[in-house]
Length: 220
Image 1: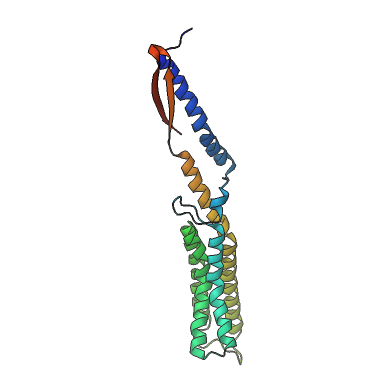
Image 2: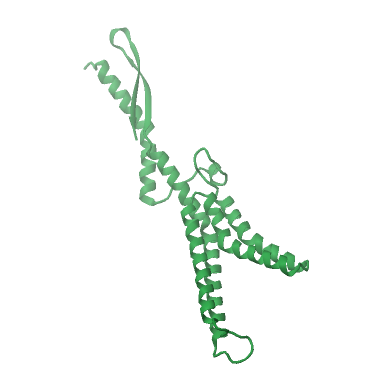
């Protein structure tokens, strides 16, 4: 049975689309089903701005350095015998590092919203704790010496609780930054797999002495 040139062209194009297009669709479907994407080894630990992929390790290092760096400066200043003004300025810097520092890795790793969420939590707890302590100690109720009906102890407990929440939030953000950057990279790779693909294939028909053509098809 003879096969027309149009039929042969359609068969060739279909075969080409099957060979070139199916692996990408299958990968995307598998990734959506499992919730994970295997990243190319060369793109996992390096910034790749052209594709939008971010480095998990670099983001972690930035969060750690931004959080612990100011604290290290405070210890170094104390060891060097810095004056009160310098020590106070560095202490303020260290506090800002704990509040903002963990978010730096998120901002550079494609997870800005998650980074800002952590900053908002720590800042809110800090402001709320400060206002609570101010209310407890209003009217000179707090005093290290003398009878203050326990106001100083309550204020100290509030301060410790607020500090614990802030430090806990900072540690959590730093420890989770790689996971959020990885999720960003997975979204980038999935979007890449969902983009339409153009498949081209040469087709030769034996009809009329042979006819050459290129058949193309766009699909996922």
